[in-house]
Length: 253
Ligand code: CIR
Image (cartoon, rainbow, N blue to C red; front, side, top):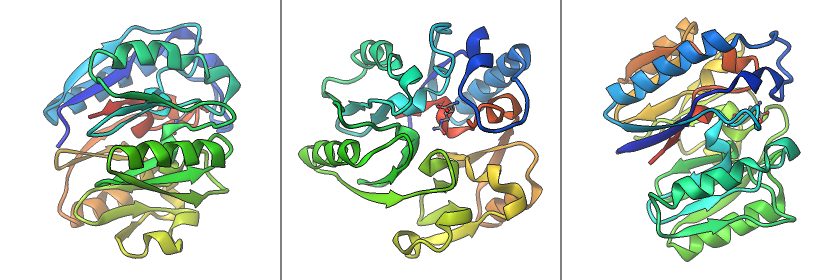
């Protein structure tokens, strides 16, 4: 069960965030409204939400998930693969000192963005992507071992982060799409397959029994509901324009 979440309000500079999506520029006002609804959804799931002020210096800093991995024993500050995002870790480290006594850091030449890390109990699947490299993953696995947990790597080629295409919903249920459907690593799970026409629906989050999912994906919604979950939809259209989704917008712990 999660008790807390950290989010960061998107700044006006979000319009300059990194994007490959070709969906147009995000509308900041609409993004703020969607962010408020996201916070509301987290609260409805029982979380105490810490809302950080917008940081205009970093256009992608609303995607807080990428700059830290939070575990039951420690926080691990990542070293983002995207140059423009690397400075986001300084503020995040200060904030996490309020919540964690054990804080570790990924160092050069290692890069990790925690959108590439999917947690299944005490095991952490780490995607090797354009943002997360082998050195970063090796350092991450060493830290996890130090605190009695484990990690393994998964190669990915078609999506930005591992959790762009995967979401673990607890109880052995795994949402999977595209390149992940046939991966050997995931065949032990009960796979809830996301249709090619609704790929963005794979980026959803399990929060204390509810699945918070992006608005507008009826097939995926039916699949998740049929697996027994309560659903809360949130419109994240303005974040999808920056290749982001629901999971990236919070740190849950
Ligand atoms: C980026 O490219 O870094 C941001 N525009 C989007 C980050 C999305 N984060 C995630 O999927 N974990």
